Image (cartoon, rainbow, N blue to C red; front, side):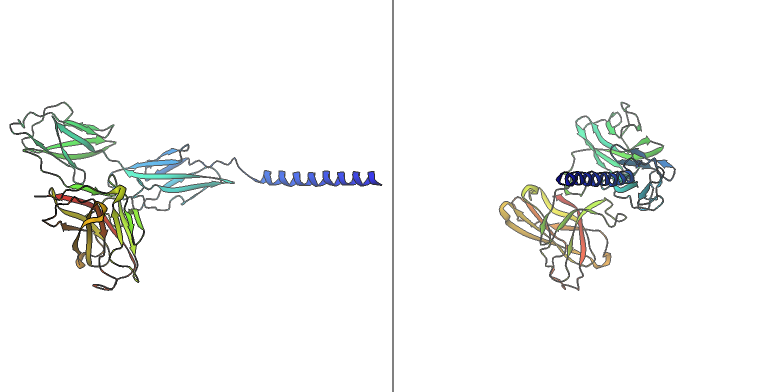
Length: 369
């Protein structure tokens, strides 16, 4: 009898094991882990993007002047695959160079993520030198100014120019150029042309503004003052006087926000500005309510404090305004800390205040004139 029980138990174990393995095999058979989730083609208008399935990136170079705020890519996928956002649905690619738009391809039980950048074809002059003098390049208006020593013959100059790889430039490198009047340099690149106006001036170069923060290539991290700082905000208005894609922002509360809400450059992100060389600050601000913007300047250890104010005007609400702040004439202490309060007033002053996001950008120290 005991032997019979053992035989029965062994049989049950084998039966249950078989059932378990059968169920397991059935589940495994229902999973599709070999489905193709590669993007086959990604096209914007008539331009094919470069798809890198290994890194999960897609880059599309579109003609200069393309409206990147509303781009509807056409995407080819393997059989049974779907993609989100869907093919043909418009997306905003204005900031995709720094913040790529994420697409996900789903097929069977697998998916793949792609980071997509759509940017205009662009060629730039990145450096311009004559002898030991370096030109000042303004990429906003495609201008170059270079200051040369007294006695320089402007009619026989051979600049060294650095520019986007793969572009062709005219006048060509090594040629002598007459700079007695402004010279136009033209870059030809991928079927597009880009022009710069280069001007040579006899004399010493004036001291240039010191860029402290511009959100892109000069972007120290702002510390929180009373509220969280978003250090990489997308510019909400790039068609005004501040076209750069990134800025900094905070949300100010309508109930309990006070003037000291903002951001600070100090500690590891402190500055070193000599008020005997710089007399003013400029900063771009965008908000929905008029009122004072305040800069508080300090030396190390939060000493030697001064409070600078400028008015954000009613007639340009919701737009970027460039505000100028005068450093006190009698200040000699080095400026190490800069605190920005985009709305210095207590809530309700000087007018009703609603919870809102406020932005600032392009902080500069301006040299004495």
